[in-house]
Every structure is written in C-alpha cells, then in structure tokens.
Length: 357
Image (cartoon, rainbow, N blue to C red):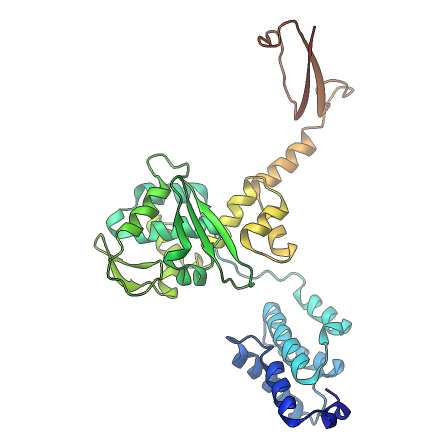
C-alpha cells in the first residue's frame, strides 16, 4: 500500500490488511522464509545499502551466496526471498531478468542428488523373499507408496478413513499434498506370483488394534503384530533403506524417503504412458519433473531407438520399411475368417480391412 492509501484507511482496517498480507507466506515455513530475508537485510546493512529489493543489490547478494552454496540452494533462497519481498515491499523480483539469467547460468551442468529407485526385480524379490513377521509393515508401505507415488509425509499423514476397501481393489485418497492438489489412486492385486497386494493391505488393516485412539493408517508392527503407536515420518522415510539393505543393493543409504515416489514415476514412465498421465499420477503442476522421468525412461529410450533404427532398410523401402501396411482380407463368411498364409513381420502399425462378399 502507498502512503496516500494508508492515510485514508482506518487503523483497524490497516491492521486486518497487514495480518492478511503476513498470512500469504507458507504457514509451516514462515520462520525459514523470514530468516532468509533477515540475512539479506543484515548483509545490506553491512554494505550500507538501504534498498534490499533492488535488482543490482540482489545480483551482488546471490553472487556472494554462490561462493558457498550449491546451485539448487540458490534457487531455494530465490524462491523464499521472492515471496517475502513481494509481501513486505510489494516488489516482484521474478521480473528481474538479469537475476534469473544469473541463477540459470549457475545451474548449468549441475545435477542434484536424487534418491535411487527400486527396479521391478527389486520389488518382486523383496515381496517374495522378505519375512512377513519382520517386514510386513515395510511391504505394506512399499505397496501404498508405489501405487500412489507417495512422499513420506503423505504416508505419515494417511488416515484410515481415506483407505477404502472396494472388493477387487483398494481406493486411497490423499486430500492434502505438498502442492495443494488432492490425489487418489487404487491398489490392485498386482502381478507378482504368489502375492496378492490387495489382500496384504486388507490383512494389515485387520491386524490394527480395535482400541486404537488415533486414525493414522500406519501403526507400528512388532513380532508379527500391530501396535497402537502411529509410525513416524522418519521411520517411514527409512523403509527404502531397509529394503535396499535386505536386498544387499549397493549404496543403500542413497535409497531415501523419496524413493517410493521416484520409483513409482519411473515404473509408470517405463510402461509407455504419456506426459499428462505421469503429471496426474504424481500431482505435479509443471511439465519439468514429469518430463524428466519420461526422458530418462529406459523403455522409452529403447522405443525411440527402434523408431529410428527400425526404419533403416537396405532395399527401396517399398515393403518392410513401411511403418504402416494395409491388408485387405476377402471373406465370404464374416464369422469364420481365415488368416492362413498371412505372415506379418517388422510391422509397427497395421490396418486390416475386412470385406464381406
């Protein structure tokens, strides 16, 4: 608000408006955001600078930060300062093109450390070989985490009433997520021989003590029995590490609490789905993250290679090099169509027209 506006607004309205503005910062992270802004202000005071929201000042400040901060951290600081400066000084630093260009330049060639993912073979081995008496809770958290691309906080806050048994499958609803996007997903029987994932989750629910006072879905599990105590975020975050240890995978410490979410997205991308499906599955707003899973998908890269190399032919390309072939089958009896003598090879798309005479 400008000074002229403040003079014409009653003090009680001014106070209400200021409280509304202050509430625009994320509630959980407000203190962290405020601390980032205080550090900027302290740095400016040390330099004798009054206007901390000036683009040149911010460029100098981020150059100072870049000497002892990673590129990913610089973007985190920028995001926090953008929010606080917008609230406190009504200035939009996202329009500072030189600052954005500087941050992008610092990010060139930088690869952030990400949790390792569990492969199909790893998941199958663990579900089949791990002892239920010891690892049943871990198995159930793996199934739920993979089915819904869940963050560890989402598994922690999952409520019993949001897990609904629908007979052939289990419907799970996550009403509150990091991106404020409600998600839901289904758990089906799965395709691991000897393992029915729906029955496993159903059995875990049935083992829950009847006099449990809270409604958190994940409760402790010891010596083959569930207990009342809810499972904490750190315990659930360690589940991928426990799985990696059991399977003797290299560098088990790199299987972090984000493993289930990354593994789920990677498995989905490998199945050949489109970008929109991956985005909806993980609840991502932008294309960037979802695109990274599709770009890094081994199966997708193999398909791309087949599309390129599969079209290389030594002949004139009039027959097998064609990606689409049309075959007309003449039949006098539409209920008994004979396909004897027809061989289809090296075809990707086939149109079959059946004519009845």
